[in-house]
Length: 82
Image 1: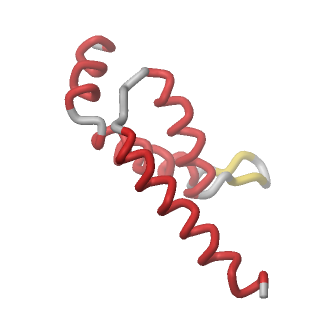
Image 2: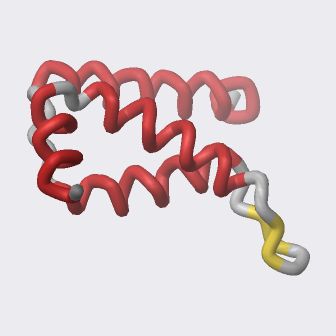
Image 3: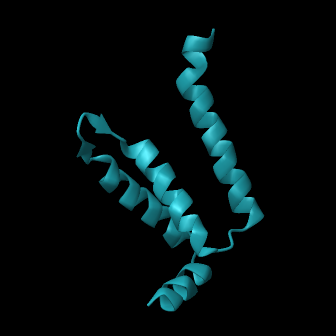
């Protein structure tokens, strides 16, 4: 089962991206006492765990996603910064 999943994800690594988002938002909805991760933290934690599978991602995709992350951080904190 794990070998099959690794094979599918190595063939189409974008599935891993959307899988981590879906599972992360699902986990982010759960409350642990008074603590709740939220969608963003849940997605980041799931992405870290899923990265242990070892699926190679193209460097161009990494650069684009990193640029989107930097843009999102700047967009969110920009009005408060100035």
